[in-house]
Length: 198
Image (cartoon, rainbow, N blue to C red; front, side, top):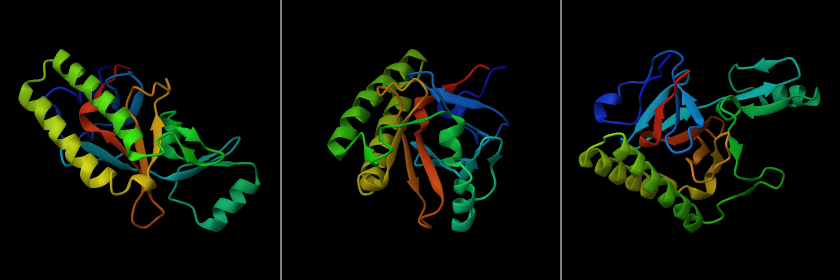
């Protein structure tokens, strides 16, 4: 089965609500997200995807709403582990030390260096796939704007993840929480996604 294309031209970017279609990082091929989750396009640059905290036990995966503090404590007492559904489902790997909470990118400069390298690779892939200059320019302008307006002012609030291959030259998925402080969401680069064949 061929999965929905998310990398070539603007016409390839409708609502992304076809059941069961997945997308991969255009650079590494790691599966990043599927349309099982609602993808919200932001500024023609990224998709933001609301996630849920789920409790994973030996025999149980609860994929309901975000649990209350009491439910979390009770479940964790029984040896279960609380995970974020998207991170768990796509085997995303935290960049940093989960025990101490330290992140791989301690500064905006460190993250921007990785992002700049990744963006160059995405541009190469877009061109290989036949994207015209207008599409490439739209990607570059949108990515720069999103970085400046959303990532820089909130940098300290993001956690960083990479795909299953753990290739840090690939897409770094950003994780943050909505204004309610409860709802996690991930951010993925729109033009950094491509179809998956399953």
